[in-house]
Length: 79
Image (cartoon, helix red, strand yellow):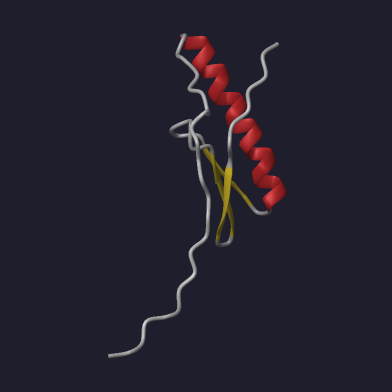
């Protein structure tokens, strides 16, 4: 059995969380907690892969180089 690894993103989205897999267009989900969103992402990914396999669609790889960082700036002064 082949194993796939994809980068997943979970963002705060009041009142809960939004999760998605950037390499797989349309593979999004949500949950009330981070853990629930992570579980739902696994289910969404499983469904995505099952449909791709059923229809013979290629499964995109997640081998792109991604650099994540934060940028912090002060609030602009009033004019």
